[in-house]
Each structure stands twice: as C-alpha cells, then as structure tokens.
Length: 100
Image (tube, rainbow, N blue to C red):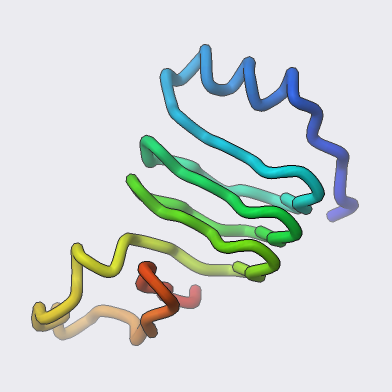
C-alpha cells in the first residue's frame, strides 16, 4: 500500500465524526491505521504506525515504530494471567504490544 499524506483536516474530521481524542505531533508517518478504537490516543513526533489497532489511553512515543500490532496500555494487562489462546506480546514503555 502506498503511503498517503494525512492532513490536519483529516484528523479533525475523524475526531468530529467519532468523538475520539487523537493527538498527533508533527512529522509522523501513519501508513495504515486499522482502527483507533480508543479515546485519548497520542502519537509522538517521528512515530511510524502501519496496520495497527490502538486502544484507549495509548501513547505512542516519539520515533516509535508500530507495525502489524495491537497496542493497549500496560496497566490493563500487567500482573494478569493471559488467556490460553492469547498471542504473546511484550511491554514497551507504558504500552503492551501484541504482534499480529
């Protein structure tokens, strides 16, 4: 898939349409965002997101690369036993990332 430039108007329209709170710093590359289900999602400068699902309160740090993954806040899963059929994931900062 060819990357397309995302304009501020695109983000504003998405926020109005869905009532989400997506904040993007300058100079990020979003190739394909499968879903942004969460409220208060933040994406730092220089971050790259491709085929990802982002949950509530996820903060993608500056220059982070998220590809083919589901991202949830660390606090939701830390210290809990995963279901038997759960895909393995890893902690990265305040997030838990499950590759798809």
